[in-house]
Image 1 (tube, rainbow, N blue to C red):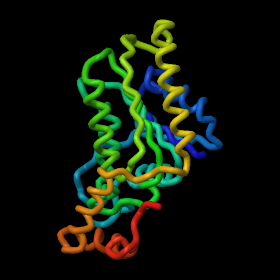
Image 2: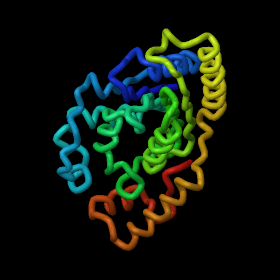
Image 3: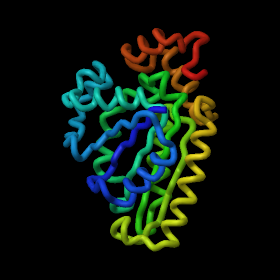
Length: 232
């Protein structure tokens, strides 16, 4: 198993990152990849539309975004860790998403995405944690991820070391439960009805040439406008 962790917070030793580390230890992957948005100093999206109109390789930040894309496609399991900042996901994680509209189902999704597993870990003092998980889940679903596990955890603490024994035990139980499911479903991921629905809506739009020429070429090359599908 190759695992990728996407750090959505500049705090490498924060609660979200430490819970992600617990999960990694439980899964014991052969290879661990990292995307550290803060460390890499990913600039904000400029809105140039190059990724959609010309391809992601023409993004002004392609020295970073192409490396990110390679890691996403290589990983079997992806962990996204983001605390709640002002009722939403962190700015770093939102900036990450803003660079990849071309990978959405409506445009040029990648076949590999449809068979991966993803875990969303989010922590907060209590407010908006479910809302944050939901918005992250919605974006990844639109990329084509079907098997998404959610770990919303109210930590009520400034850092991981200050968590109570009771809260630590609760976290361990949740992490154990998710890790068991991931190992059980390895190489057995099925595409859910939400993703299939988006795919077939996009297929209709592509067949009617409502999308860009670059999108249409991608779908034709994949055979998705005929009988081929991106899932097993």
